[in-house]
Amino acid sequence: MATDKQDSMQKKKRILLKIGSNTLTKETNNISRGKIEDIASQLQKLQDEYEFIIVSSGAIAVAKQFVKLESKHNGVFVKQALASIGQPHLIRIYQEIFREYGLLSSQCLLSYSDFEKQESKTNIVNTINVLVNNNYIPIINENDTVATDEIKFGDNDKLGALTACLLKVDLFIIATNTNGIYTKKSIENKHPQTMALVDDFNDLIKQVVNSKSSHGSGGMQSKIEAASIAKKAHIETWIVNGLEDNFIINAIENNISFTKIK
Image 1 (cartoon, rainbow, N blue to C red):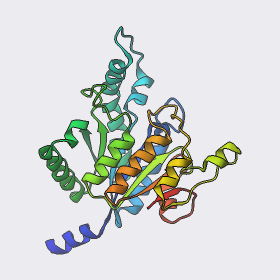
Image 2: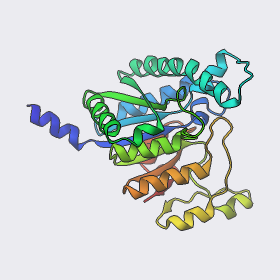
Image 3: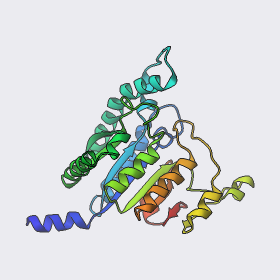
Image 4: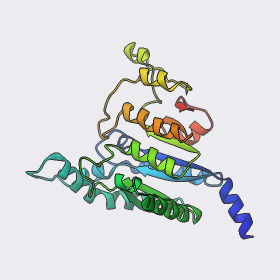
């Protein structure tokens, strides 16, 4: 029986889902419980065919709902302090909502240096595999509290890509606030048009208009860089509008416009 169970686990497609602050807040100043419910509902429906690992931003956005910190230090220390306050709240919200949908979740905090040491990389893989094989959904964030300016990821797009490569996922989905990547010309004409399929990565780089998101520290440039990291590991990246309801299922069923980077 154990072999059958292992076989069924191995057949599941592994997806790393990266969720940015703009998606989690639905572009407001507060974390949207409705958005997390939307994600949980989809994961519940897909759990027989797919296993999920989540890389989630949002700790700082959550903290800003509760506190305003004063400091004589520079901005990075304030952000680290906010992350420290917000992270437990963020995980609590995930756990409460996921539990309502019968989903188990866990927290994993990673630092950039973890990806530079073989022992750390092995530990991450082994721990996450144990969690996933026991039906836990790991929710990963950067360990902002201990990161310094030099070793910070800058945004969770890169963290998502590095984790996707380390865990050898089948698919890397970046949830953002646009319908994928738009062609430069269509943005200039104010009629955004999605690049549906990208085979030529150089063509993609030419199309990117750099803009930072209002809550996140990324923007489209960081998503392209993340996709580039995943591409080197032969992992397909999808850039999907996470603000839409049912965005994961709709992308899988090809019912919405999004960018697929082969």
